[in-house]
Image (cartoon, rainbow, N blue to C red; front, side):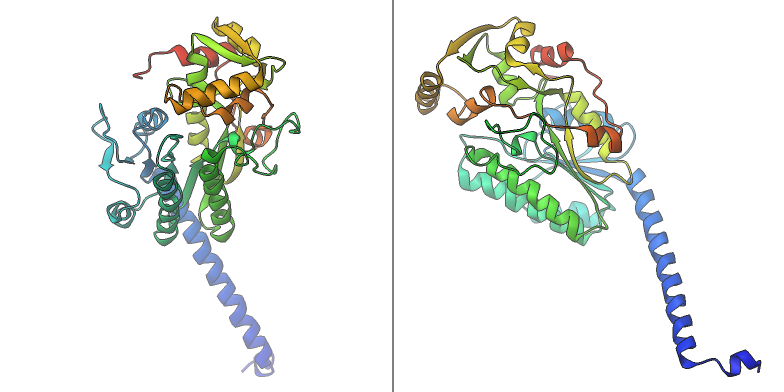
Length: 349
């Protein structure tokens, strides 16, 4: 027996064992990281809310490169044959089977309900309870990537907003907009998941007003032939083309991407400039007149705009998307004119 070995202390044995354990642990983590990276790069992607216009545009791009699994309770007309589709409620156990049966690489959650006229309890159950189930399945089945499409509206239009809001700004959008409360809650659930489960790369995207064939409030507002505006207010606005949002989602799916990112489009523009670009006639109204008029039309079910949304054409709510540009490599490809005029494109696309 060598002298050094004969006088080796028990502490030295413990140190070697600990070092060995650490080496094995490192190898396991490395193997696990490699496995997750490969799975993330090539495995199937689940898209909830795939039958919406944004979901269909994303699916039609992604399915060229990898297996896409769509989940929606609406039918998927003209579905490409290689896209697997499940017409089910995300809150049901059948949805869990999708995660249990396949090695899902990523979940892109687009299935957020925006219906100001819908039943509030059903709205909340679908959005919050449904997303909580999704988070549980992502955790239980070790899904490597989660992407939530939130919105810059979670910050809220306010008279005291700075010119550009960063991702660290408080989420005050729910103050006057009950419809935004679910979205704020989802955003915060995803943030909590991000910290509790670092093995999953969680990404929260907060795009500004998405324009295109999508059926949302800003696109519907800009499609009006005569557009109401507020006397004395001409806020700067940010818009983003729907295909730039699709691009941002694809960048978020890359291995290594994680965190919260604001997503904006071309240079901000005043509301009046945007309306001139689209050639729209305007109807300037005092704020109180506009509010009372919209409330009356809302009660008569003659408009889809709740009165609190007037704040979006009254105050500024713009974001700083420099983090997305630096970390994700995001760069909008559509200029201002193309982005604005996307609201007049064929809506069946």
